[in-house]
Amino acid sequence: MQYVSTRNGVAPTSLSETIVSGAAPDGGLFVPVQLPRSLPVLGREPRSLADSARLVLAPFFAGDALEPHLEAICREAFAFEAPLVPLGTSTDFALELFHGPTASFKDFGARFLAACLRRTDGGHLLPLTVLVATSGDTGSAVAAAFHRAPGVHVVLLYPDGRVSPRQAHQLGCFGDNVTALRVAASFDECQQAVKSAFADERIRERLRLTSANSISLGRLLPQMVLHAHAAWSCKGALNLIVPTGNLGDALAAVWAREVGAPIGDILLATNANRVLADFFGGGDFTPRPSVATLATAMDVGAPSNFERLRWTFPDDATLRSRLGAVSVDDEEIRETIKEGERRHGRVFCPHTATAVRVLEGRRASGDGRTWAVVATAHPAKFETVVEPLVGHAVEIPDSLAALLARPAHARDLSDASLLSGWLLDWVDQAEAGLRTGRARDENS
Image (cartoon, rainbow, N blue to C red; front, side, top):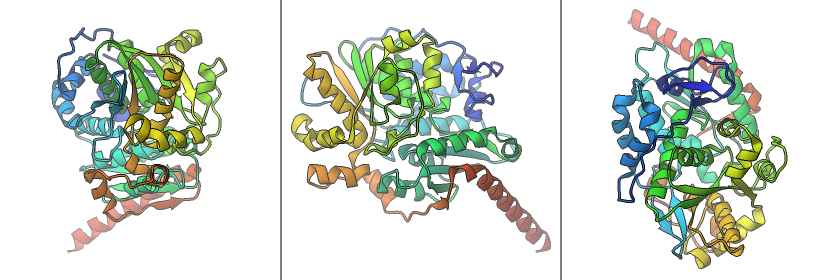
């Protein structure tokens, strides 16, 4: 399998090269030359998540240097469960993706990417710098996956005041080879700054950059597994409601369906950032500045993966026929969290609550099919929003409690546009430190 850019400005390249590169040099996103349609027709017999991963991803790894390592990569990345749990009825489910080390669905993709890079990244003189813009959960998942990895530096860029306090603590609690940059900006501005850094020739000459956002295929491909595995474990076609901001997990669900997983309808649940809801309602795709909401990780006004979605379905009419989107405002999120235990027997994070609200709308319209909402994060990560609404403390998972017990520190960056300059200064300081160390060794 070979890969090209959505903008057609890159010669076909291997999966290994796309994973190391992260973003396509022409500014586009890497995609397979064509989506494989060879997923085997499987029964509903139980299988491990790692076994499902090997089946789903084998066509994408075909012919690549990573192909012999696929089984080991899957075992490392899918070492915890993604259970499909009932929400009080035989047709309502939650796909719980928050049982990893940082209590977010992004743990799967980050660990998968790290496992791939460990097997592709030998023989280079410069260390690898993983540069990430995060609206909360991506950064901590990437930090956990790469923490203390030899030859790897991680730089996390996040919008100050637009992530939860516990998310911010997670981003700054790793230290060592992980640097958190707190920026007076929106997530969209952080994301644009990262894209600009990848396009900056001065930086490319002095740093080996890769991405761990969902623009990276190393993050996106493993997320397909989660939806396919859930669909295989369900009787009949499973319809999905995916809370989304940057469209990574939603696109993964679409690709899983396109390659043959028994997934029915897919609905996107968005917050008050309406760019997707407006497009799927018949309007133009018009990126706009994001607005702050309770579902902070979804505060995206220019979702990057829409470019891949349009590559998948080049005709807008076809795209709209294959997906739908519903916008949920903060008041609806509050009500859904407040009533979650009574209505569904669960406490939901603000992002999952957007999907639950859309599910409730489907039921109110008479839709009796089997639906699963994708539960993207543990509610304990958003205690300042959730606990006042449910009226009690939310139990903290052990893995999250361990991270919150660490001291945390982030550096301040006054403007996202200063990222490229910060990176160049950072390299200067690192090189000066190396020269000082060599001189000291020579004189000792």
